[in-house]
Image 1 (spheres, rainbow, N blue to C red):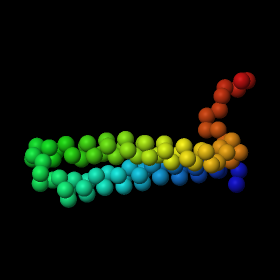
Image 2 (image 1 turned 90 degrees about the vertical axis):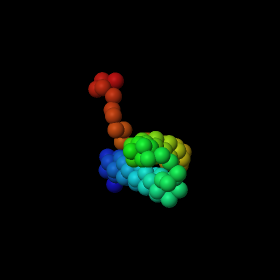
Image 3 (image 1 turned 60 degrees about the vertical axis):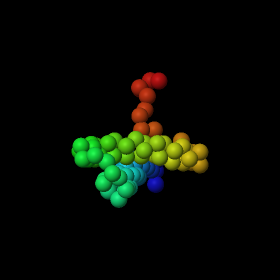
Image 4 (image 1 turned 180 degrees about the vertical axis):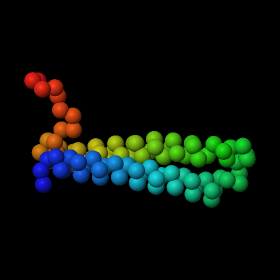
Length: 92
């Protein structure tokens, strides 16, 4: 495979990985809430749970993704296998 195909596959795989992390964290938070906290918190708080968990899942997945990508970048020479996504202006 050439560098362009590697780049496209890497971007698609990384996107799917990030979505999978986000959904997994969201479901984990929601399951923990239903099983542990739902009966203990006031009724007015229940309306805020889904948006808060969604935002928390995005933030947590961002940090997990960055950590995973950092480890991957240490092991793989990106210039050798991937094309740059954004190239500079012509003539530079």
